[in-house]
Amino acid sequence: MYYVYIIECKDKTLYTGWTVNLERRLACHNKGKGAKYTRSRYPVQLKYFEQAASKSEACRREYEIKQLSRAEKIKLINSVL
Figure 1 (cartoon, rainbow, N blue to C red):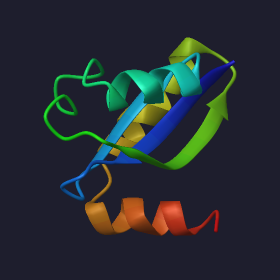
Figure 2 (cartoon, rainbow, N blue to C red):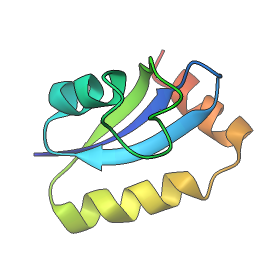
Figure 3 (cartoon, one colour):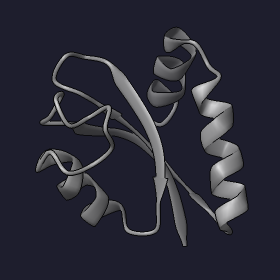
């Protein structure tokens, strides 16, 4: 199973990524060993995730989410609350 996720960094910016192990990936981000973008912005907090059936589906969805404006991403996050 693949996961597409949105995390909020300590500076309130949003980062979108994909992984096969969500818990391990969040731990990496929070140790400063995640993506280059989050290395200086941790700790991070998971705000949203969704499952994908394949790597290509996860990558495609990650791209779609990254194209959204911040307001649209927040709307997406709030849609699951």
